Amino acid sequence: MVKITDVARRAGVSPSTVSYALSGKRPISDATRRRVQAAVRELGYRTDDGGRSRSGARAKVLALAVPMRPGIHLPVVTQFAVSVVTAARARDHDVLLLTQGEGDEGIGRVTETGLADGVIVTDVQLQDPRLPLLRSCSLPSVLIGVPAEADGLTCVDLDFRAAGELCVDHLAGLGHRTVALVGSPPEVYVRRTAFARRLVEGFTAAAGRHGLASAALPCGTGRDAARAVAERLLRDLPALTAVVVHNEPLVDPLTEAFEQLGMRVPGDLSLTAVCPAPVAAAARVPVTSVAVPAAELGARAVHLLIRKLSGAPVPGTTLLPPRLTERASTAPRGH
Image (tube, rainbow, N blue to C red; front, side, top):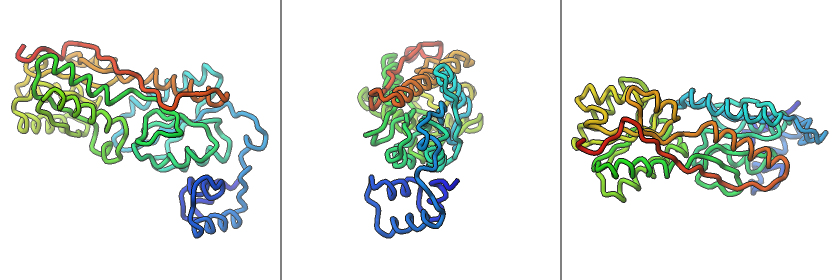
């Protein structure tokens, strides 16, 4: 069976460009369209190759696009996957996992073969390369994450901008005047991953609104990275008394690093985190946190996708409001 990805490789273009050239939904240059049409003829590609489009039958399968990229924290990915599988099985659907690292080949393959009725997309970037195909193809989709331009898409996510603001509001309310954000690994920001960028925006906006001195730094994982970023923050911000962590594996190593540098948590330094609640509660110093509701996000994504498959209307973007739980890691400044 010739797939759209085969045509794309032969023509030297992306699967989404093939889809545009064949559907006419977007303007494509004449030269590109001729290359695509030549590849279609040479390979004998037919747009009705997918078994679903010929028979009209549902596969009762949902695809879950989870690209295995650098900087992704696998335990969080697993939580999303488990929640999607659990919610899908409750609705008598199986889940097909797509782990293609970059691009839209996996989604294009599922679209053309009819292996799945719809797709849930994770690790969304602000300018995500998968969006043109998702907008042009017939496969219904839901994104866990919100790109810069969400028109015509169905998205659900935690309101990460509001989460960043909420953490700073809490620390400012405790009297802290100098705050720092220890964020995700650098490659996450280089990819312009939506949730990470939006949290930085919220942190920065709230720090400015409260008139706080602030800094935001990316950080890799592990004790060496935690120690290096702690040393840099204390050097650059000697009056530092509060930190927001948006890097789940760093919660304990960062606490340990600051304590080794003479900063007790919460006596000298208040620590908040945006992470799953069980991680915050189980930390060596239980951490005041905004929970990342992976189970709820996965279940909502499945619910929205099933509604789309039934033809029911769905909202364009759903943002879950952040909720902060106070634990032992925060205290009034100078406490």
